Amino acid sequence: MTKTLDVITIGRAGVDLYGAQVGGRLEDMGSFEKYIGGSPTNIACGTSRLGLKSALISRVGDEHMGRFIREELARHGVDGKGVVTDPERLTALVILGIRDEERFPLIFYRENCADMALCEQDIDEAFVSSARSVLVTGTHLSHPRTEAAVLKALGFARNHGAKTALDIDYRPNLWGVAGHGEGESRYVASGQVTEKLQATLHLFDLIVGTEEEFHIAGGTTDTVAALRAVRAVTAATLVCKRGAKGAVAFESAIPDNLDEGISGEGFPVEVFNVLGAGDGFFAGLLKGWLDGEDWPTALRYANACGAFAVSRHGCTPAYPSLQELNFFLERGMTRPDLRNDPALEQIHWSTNRHGDWSEMRVFAFDHRMQLESMAGYTPSKGGAFKELCLEAALKVQNGRSGYGILCDDRIGRRALHAASGTDLWIGRPCEWPGSRPLTLEPSLGPDCGGLSEWARENVVKVLCFCHPDDDEATWAWQLAEVRRLYVASRRNKLEFLLEVIPSKVASITTDTTATLIRSFYAEGIYPDWWKLEPMDEPEAWTQVCAAIEEHDRHTRGIVVLGLDAPEDVLKASFEVAARFPLVKGFAVGRTIFGSVARGWFEGSINDEEAVEEMAKRYSRLCTVWDGARARVQEAAE
Image 1: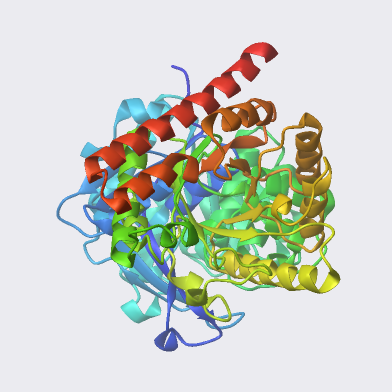
Image 2: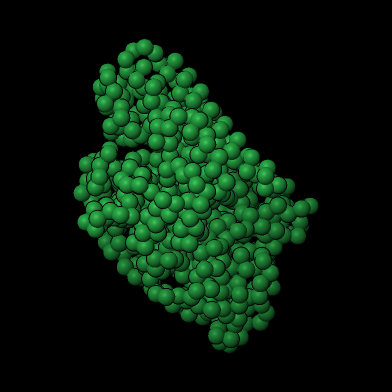
């Protein structure tokens, strides 16, 4: 049959709660970052980032953490059909931290957890047979029920011509040979564990482990002797990870010296966090192995992916995209602390963002000053009106992708919070309305610390009224405010939208906006999104797109704002903008809600009528944009 998957991983699926403070005891951690976790889950996500078609077989609980894992798998492009929801058990958790360069304390919360309930009935032959390879991790050989599931999957894989791989992944306390407080322990001798592992090693084509993991598999702490003991029961290629010394592969007999094995280029990076580095390594190794590369090349990929993981916080979030890996291998390493390499981190950020926003139809009702100036406005009525705006947006969206809103927190808080989880793109303004020079909303705090309370799906949006002819003091002030907000956005893992409107400052020419864009990039500000005013001249759009692509080939793109223009004017501007692929759509507000809001505040129209009218206007604009884009595509064909 046709192989639709490159790799299926089997085993642990949990949630990692990583201590956000570095250098302290786990006892003293004050906050945590939440990531997807578990070796096979990490490897599935890591291989997917590298362009392989990946899937996971595991179990999760029927609760929030289980749903988080499912959603994260989907966001990473990992097939989750093999993930079973367990109605009786909770999703596994791990609490872990970075103490120093050598100590990484962790506690496994896995008592009767969901993934350890994986059983033979969860293994579907058709699903397993659809993969070119199957990877299992050692933990699921530690219990008869999960072992039976693993052996069944391996049998199907071998019957259907799939390659098989084992990550020994020895955690003594998960085998019951170390206590709960020894989650960091990597080696405790156990004849029972050795016997269990050796009974299955013949089932694999590739076996990967650290020296300590081969010690447990081989039953001795002499690494060469351990590898030979493993070789005695399996013909698999053995890959031994040696920390700072890199890794070596052995396809046949084990030599007297490990240095005589096959090796690949290594990368001497600063050790910041070893947790999850082995999973990153295995993801890179699988990329090379399944692509048919020779072992030196596959090991080079593996070492590079491990280096990324060692240098960053978290496991899965640290792994590179294929574009990032290629950039790193082509350019080379410029500094050992990769997380502080600006060029590398920009590619890491921009190529690992989640969500497909190739189309953007955004209803912008983040306006504050404009509503506050309307007759009949009160804060409570303003908030209620914004809930009607959201209702109209959802009515038009109707569960489809490519729709979004801009909504503030000051007047529109209830609407903003209600929008979470609706699959709308959600932008949230940060500027004080109408301010020039730019002033940020006081709720953000003097250090923009308020962003730490924002939902991760919120996009930071800031409007800057600026012009290339601004005096030096005004430009310096506004640039500093934008940079401050941009840096805080990245620190809080929030996407950033920069809106610039030069026409409200002075007259503009075809190169005005492009000049501004280059000026922001020159200061190290890389917006995920640009929001730009309509431009009638195609040459102006040509220059804008060139300015962006010169600096950021991975930008999300541009949305066109409306400036309260009539629909026919917007239609004409859309016809021009739609010719440029970098323009993803529009973000229009007052054209949709302006007159409706005035009538609603005055009491001349009711809630239902307001929603219906705004939905009609929003829908018409969507149709106008879609039509403009369709005509461009038809002309290209």
